[in-house]
Image (cartoon, rainbow, N blue to C red; front, side, top):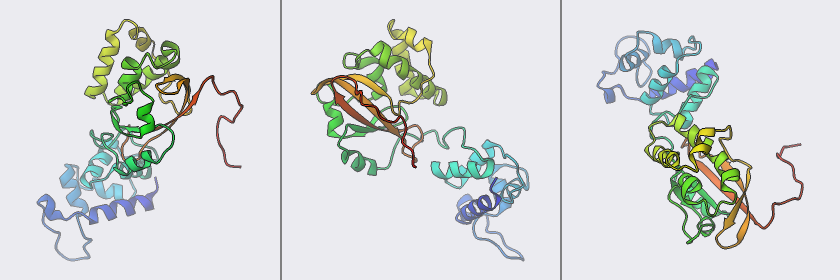
Length: 271
């Protein structure tokens, strides 16, 4: 626990919330009064025993429970980055999940400009793999010149004809991604529907039931038939917009023809 940084974060956050916005009076009486909510008022609003919040802000709570931290973060109106910071300062670890159920559904509009400035096929999806934005190069990858509405559904159901060696090079690696996403988002209707369609297919069901350990494709190279350039390989570069847990930013480096055989380092490191 970083007591000093945690105290500064919490004290600054509660100072920005007027008690009146929660139907509470502004504290009066002798002594110096900090702006915003009092520590006692936070206990009231969170329905916690007296002194719970003061104990945390003072740095006396070892490994405070995530449910307390979540309630505080929501009261303070934190975004996902602030939520992660709170958990790291208070517990020394990342939170077990996003702060809000809707996190991962939207990304800042600046990502559209960023994606359009990339020369390789590139796109951004939300936590349900719904396409949020992409560049023309990504559209050109697909038969008909139009990218799919949901990239997970395309990889597992609609795009099999374009995905070379689908049963061995794609499905065993993509199925675990779907399973992992459903484990963290069990109420996701889009992903649940995709799972149901996969399980209803006699070809894909055994591959889904087999499971696997691959949950992200960063750095993977897989065979594909480009709608314009023909057979080739895509190398996947994956990142995540920090404001939207579960979303993903993908750059696909396409190379036509046989797999690239020029040796290159697996990882880039500073020397």
